[in-house]
Length: 245
Image: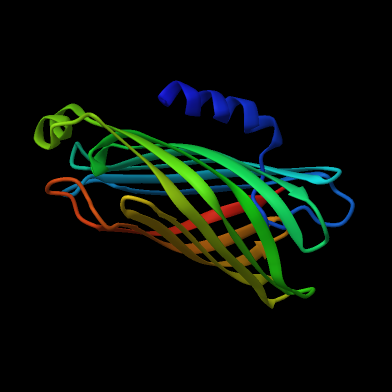
C-alpha cells in the first residue's frame, strides 16, 4: 500500500494546488511566499529554533497548482525537542468561478509523535462560499487515505508497525483583509476515519515594507487516539518574516 500511495503522489505532483491561497495577483501565473524564523540563545541556556516554509502557486488555465515545503527544528541544551518536516501539494480543477475539483498528497516526518512518517492523500469537491475583494471562505470535502509507519520503539509497544485508514477529508479556509497592509487567516483541516486527525492554523500577517511582512501564527494539531505516552494535542506559536514574490 505504501508503494501505491507513493506512486499516486508522484503522478499527481505536476497538477497540485491549494484553493484560496490567492497570492497570485493580477495577470501573474506564478508566485510564492517564503517564511523564515529563528531563535538562538547562548550562555547559561543554549537553545535554537528554526521554522521555514516555502509556498509556491502556479496557475495553468483551469488548473491551480500549489506546492508546499515546511520545516521546524528546535534544540535545547544539546537535545532535540522538536523536529517536523512536511512536503505537500494540491491540484484544483476549476469547474466554475466558485467550484472546483481537488486532489492532494502530503508526506510528513515528525518522530515526536511516535511515527517515522505519515503519507496522506485526498480528492473531492471544493466550493467558495463567500467572496469579496477583501474576504473569502472556501470549503472542501472528499474521501482520503492515510498511511503511517510507527518507529521501532512504538512498534514494539503497540504490536504492529504500520497503520492505515480510509478517511473523510474536510477543509475550511478563511481569509480577510484587516487593512491595506494586514490580513487575518484561519485554516482548519480534519481527517476522520479510525480516529480524528485535525490541524488548525490561525495567523496574522502585516506588511513591513514592500514585499516583506511579519507573520504571527498559532498552529494546533489534534489526534484523538495518540500512541502510548504521547499527548493528543500539540501547539506551535511562530513569529516569522515573510517574503512574497
